[in-house]
Image 1: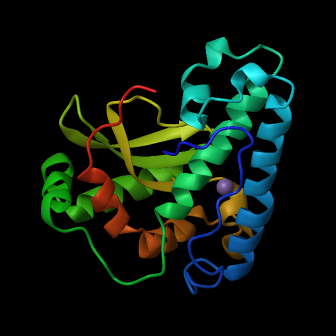
Image 2 (image 1 turned 180 degrees about the vertical axis):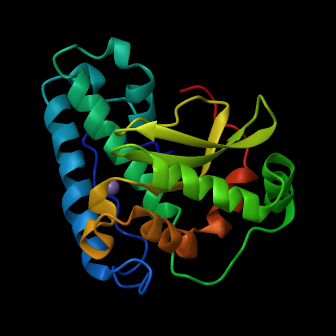
Amino acid sequence: MTTQTYPFSLPPLPFAPDALEPHFDARTMSIHHDEHHRVYVERLNAALKDHPGLHGRTIENLLRNLNRIPPDIRPAVRNNGGGHLNHSLFWSLIGPPVKTAPAGPLLDALTASFGSLESFRVKFREAAAGHFASGWVFLVADARKNALEVLALPDHHCVLATHQTVLLVCDVWEHAYYLKHQQKRADYVDCWWQVANWQEASRRFGRPVEAEA
Ligand code: MN3
């Protein structure tokens, strides 16, 4: 994703907190980015502080090689590093609602993998609304299978396989929606659909698979 190494920093929101109204409310966006994401970054840096041997590694490299992280900080790196990586993706893959829909090669791939755009939407909605407890739901392009897939992961687990590219992502932790939607996660997922950034998804779909970090 990035070449950034320790100390990691909170990426600015790429839009104003109220830019996704009425779908995502400004208060939730501010708390989600300025508090939740910031704390993940701070705790990740705190865990790495006394381990200069890890200071030259990118976040993907750290997460792909957790077995080489000292056991005493491994959970902190996994949880907070994963939270940092997933949230950074999340902000870049939502945006002000502009009624864009997938087109061209990405629409063709969605149709080939799911039958239709509507079938994909239903499948993604079911995965996100039905995900047990906290986690993330992704649309990924799998280069080995030459197909698109919906992937649900728990906690702050990340898509790290180098043959998989994240095209869209929905945060299904309660902090992403509870202020506005309380327990009605499916309503939040419907709002997420309105702000999904298909332009960025198309750009990511068109780029080559990342080299092994
Ligand atoms: Mn979150």
